[in-house]
Image 1: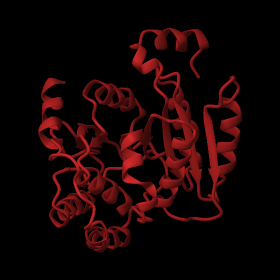
Image 2 (image 1 turned 90 degrees about the vertical axis):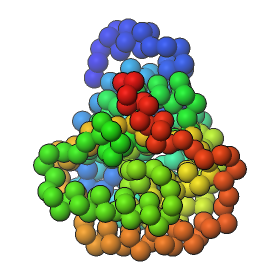
Image 3 (image 1 turned 60 degrees about the vertical axis):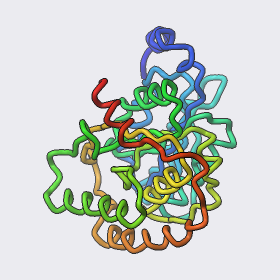
Image 4 (image 1 turned 180 degrees about the horizontal axis):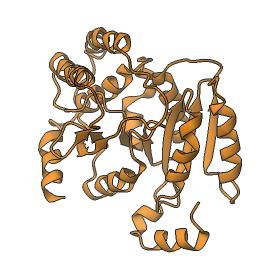
Length: 284
């Protein structure tokens, strides 16, 4: 942890809009005991004094839930709790974990919500940049994207893993007819109003296709979308839960999404996701 004086001085250097922003990070966990403490520490070291963390644990056998409770006691020493842990009885799926965590964040008053992984494949250092872009542009959704100019993948990824990721994005974009380049991205910053307009009660995806469904609805409903280039790192510790059967299941469920949301209409003009993404990259 940073000394209080150091953290306060860094916070005072930020624009007022950042210091007063109620931002909540939602992280689902299953067997992430080796990563969670480092991730929570990195998040609370960010120069965002109003940042809160919600961990949604699916009864991890490695004790992630118990560790999360210990960390919550450590980080909740001040007047306002900064960390909440939601315990679920079993492995109920990524999609429902995110929905539970985001609903809790909105209930607690979050104006902005970040969704990300616990394994450092999504670096916390991008969060202030994502928030700054959202506040400066009025965007509804910021996507930490691997597939816009400036984005990159870990060099340790095999050609097969790269191919599967590329294929999943091309396939999803073609079937759903949208322009977001990184359809399967799990690193997003949401404006509160966007999440309320989506209506989380309408989200039924219970696996990694959750990412596709949220991206699809964001563009279908006319949200202002910016894809911000990031470097996607391979997880530091543990094994990926994204195997071939999961990817294949996600592929056929894309057709289900197209059918289920066929009646939802776009209330505003076409979002300028890609041109705006490329502009952000050139100006950086």
